[in-house]
Length: 338
Image (cartoon, rainbow, N blue to C red):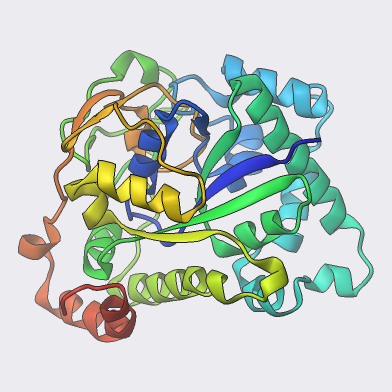
């Protein structure tokens, strides 16, 4: 059986992963599914809306995927799947996964990791079949999930490491931002005007506002360092576990999306695809079926990309200095000016 090819967007959050996934969704043979690691809780349990605006269980795309992969929603124990995920793909397991390609549960003789990997293999294969595409774009970001996918024979993994200036990420993490719109999300779909797009508040089914998690400057800087350093370690894994890897800076993506994406896909050994939907910094986005992620996933239409650099004017100097101090070594490595 042919392996499911996966482009896994790794790195920290608030780095443009949703935008990148939406652009890749426009390629002829790719389907963007958002942060698939969150499907068990935010999809199956919470029934949050996917990128098309419909609630997960009411979305025709995801209903077809679930039926093909697991038979039906009723036949899958989402809580058990979430527990399996937590037993295998936690970020604290990254060193063990990198060094030993094992997790603690396996050392104790548990069969749960293999059961979870089998479920993931069926899930990604069903996504390809329902979408009629051969490449799944997953913006889950956490390297632990990528290392789990790399263990699965039925998955052909490619890691696209997306990096953004740590100060911009910290500033974004400090802002109040909605996670998703309510049941009428599809009625409010609109063209994106900038790469940072929508600021409209979102409401859950009970009318409460759902806000993305916020972080202080120190926490944001430490998480940025950990996640990006982990992603940077992927090319240095043993030769027998070589995983195609490419690094892409958010700033380069926004300035010249065609060149940045074309170069990254070349490095991932995927060749140069048709990028006719990109004209300079203008990109056409279609409707997607993204799980979790940034609320810009609800936008479709024409995007005139512009760098979101509000942090340069509005970030507190103390926070700027703190984040710079903690992240300066990796920032220089990635080509940023300190």
